[in-house]
Image 1: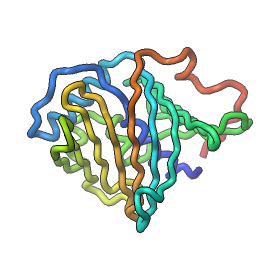
Image 2: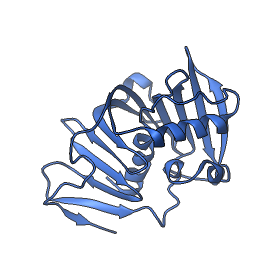
Image 3: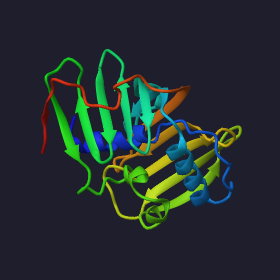
Length: 215
């Protein structure tokens, strides 16, 4: 997987976390919703969750997309990790601005630093809400049931991410869905659920015995 694709994937899964119950933000201001979302995310203790990812190439029907499943381990603002289930096992670990990417059982993995990259979308979690205002325009729409849909679009052109949609449950402030679209109008959609408190020991450390390649 290319570094560009891995970074684009990082934003999607980085957003896919349950939030601790926090005071409900104003439901008519997207930046207040975003701020409440981020505060809840930062205040939450370690969490685990499951996800289903569907990739739909442009021109294909949603039911014809490629589906994968996996698990998340979350401990923000420090680290997050996502592991894909067989038959296409792979894992990502993001701590600070360093990403590790590896396939279980293989001796070589990739490691790269996001500090010098624009990281469109991933900066959603690297920057403050006030700084994000200088990079994105935001809209807020009502979704089904008691949910809110936050839509972010980069102000500067990006091939990797042209739109991000985050669906949040307005009652418990947990993320339920996340969809992003790239410049080719391909879509990645994550459905997140089965939230649990805590994470297995060692989940936020790179696995030993891997030779890490860097750009």
